[in-house]
Structure formats: C-alpha cells, structure tokens
Amino acid sequence: MDGEVIESEGLRHTPAGLARLAFRMRHTSMQQEAGMQRQVQCEVPALALGEVAQKLGNLQPGQQLRAEGFLAQRSLKSMQLVLHIDNVILR
Amino acid sequence: MDGEVIESEGLRHTPAGLARLAFRMRHTSMQQEAGMQRQVQCEVPALALGEVAQKLGNLQPGQQLRAEGFLAQRSLKSMQLVLHIDNVILR
Image (cartoon, rainbow over all chains, first blue to last red; front, side):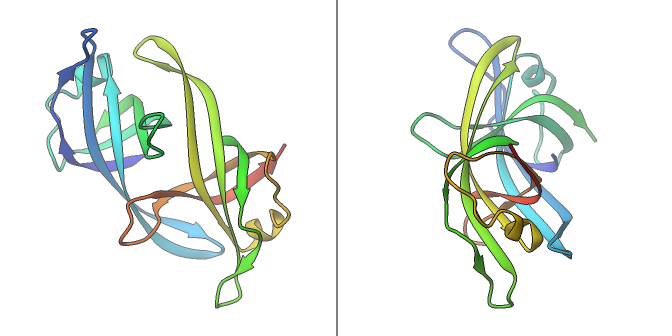
C-alpha cells in the first residue's frame, strides 16, 4: 500500500526488547469499481516490529512510503485492522 | 485475501440499480514477523458492486473464497476499512 505518514508514535521497544513503531498512514488512489473510476482514501493504522521498525525510526509526518505486509486485528477484543509491515520503501 | 464468509446481507441494489452485496469475511493465516511465525486472524467487512455482486449473489456463511480488491473507508465519517472486491474466486 502506498501512502503518506500522518502521525507516528516514535520508536519504542517491547518488554522483550524488540523495536516497535506504530504509526498511521493515509492512502489515496484512483480505483476501478463496477466499470467506474472512483477516488479512494483511507487511513490505516500501521505497525512495524524489529528491523523494519529500526529502519523507520525517524519517520516524520508527510513521509511518502510503500508498505507491504499483512492485515491483522489490533487485539482479540478489537476488530480494528492494523497493517503489519514486513517490507517498506521510503520515497 | 483468502477467507471464509461469516455473514452476508444478501444481494441488494443501489438506488441507481447497481447490484450490491455486503458481507463479512474472516481471514486466518500464518505470517512471518520480526523473524517469528505468528498466527493472524482478522474479520474484514467486504463490499462487491455490479457484476462481482451478481456473481456472488448466493453467498453462504462458510463459503471459502479468495477476494482481490482495494481497501477504502466505509464513509467520510467512519474510518472503518472495507475491502472493495473487484475479483473473486470461490473455493
């Protein structure tokens, strides 16, 4: 998913010492749906752990990036989706 | 995204006469994160319009499928993510 960083918590560490970076990104694009062009926008909570988090440590709002990963629930109690990032390209 | 249908509203039509099918799907998989294997589960609201909706009209809970599409916000007011499906394979 391509997007722009809206806000970042800054680099933290888990109790086990794993680097952890939570941020929000905004994605905007044109998509084809039922034969019509439409603009799509969404804000997605994102989470990077370990090496990816360290690489992103200085992430600033406005940074453009392409994030690849998988969607998972925030927790057992929350249905909210979080994009877990396992590969990222800064632009 | 591979998943299983949890519930489906059934086939409806928009005021403009476009077929519309909203359903929820559950995705479960193993993913690699920070060098560790983890199980991922999430429930994702999904929306199909037009031909894709018609193709899926009889969707039943328990149906396995692979859905391809894009994520968008449910509405301007809601940050909830919805998977808009532009291609689907029933399994």
